[in-house]
Length: 109
Image (cartoon, rainbow, N blue to C red):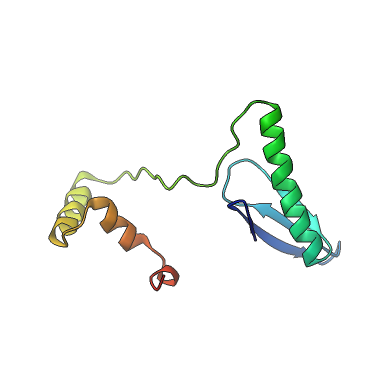
């Protein structure tokens, strides 16, 4: 489930008879629950909106779901090999790494 770019996973708690969800693409904890899909969707929306309002009231910037920027540390020799391979393919190191890291499910996109 996604709302305002906040992605969530949902599990069913059989004992309690409710679905519970948690936003997974932020370090801040945002949870929600519902007994039906409609309740669950509404609860996600309400929880994210409450989180954003809370941040605004405290004059804090809400944590945004992943910026798209990652620092990767690797041994110098691996760095050289990867950079060399990227140049052989006529690509920037960034473009090469993005292509190599892209999940197979996204390659047709």
